[in-house]
Image (cartoon, rainbow, N blue to C red):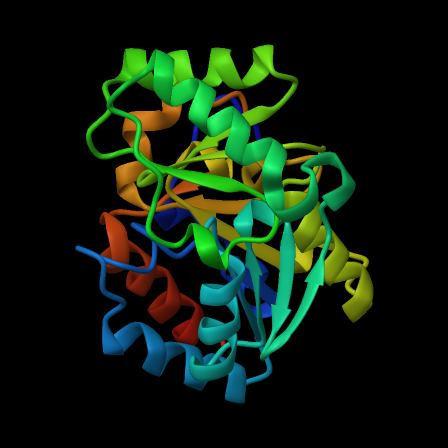
Length: 259
């Protein structure tokens, strides 16, 4: 398929959905609507897992959230902090190079304070105490120009910034959601990436849309506002936004697999 633009989800091949072994999905504004994951999503996860499909969440949320999500939801594990940490229940495996951010994330904290002096409306998120590999900033009050300014200031300090639909994340290193999911696949023995379906909604999900890493990807409908900014776009666009789009896909997989 030509990957210049996404295809409608109705074109998703049923054979691909039957052959899936792993679903790797973003959480906020992909599985959730207005900050909540509907019970229908969790019920679909339970049915899919009973049918043999592995379910991994891939989020920018902090490591402590990842522990909780992994332990209490019907999933096989969680990639947290945009690929910085793998969570299996209460077990945490950092993938980021912690030596790059200083003891107690001191380098990131200092960078945040310097950025705040230049962009006064910047505010850290409440979950920073639960983070191991990055520093998160609340995106809600910031304009697009301010987001770009934060990225420039982070880069000037030798750091990176990635944006989700809700947060800006300061970090160091080369890890992404895709490198972490690739690590999970390797550990599970999933060599054929065509057996993996990735799903997301925002710019921090772009690595999951890279066809060289994951040939099969989908975006909920609200990803459309970010498409002009994405080099790698999802292969398919779901017909509905947020959790409604995710549930549409989960139900399609259930039907194709006779579950």
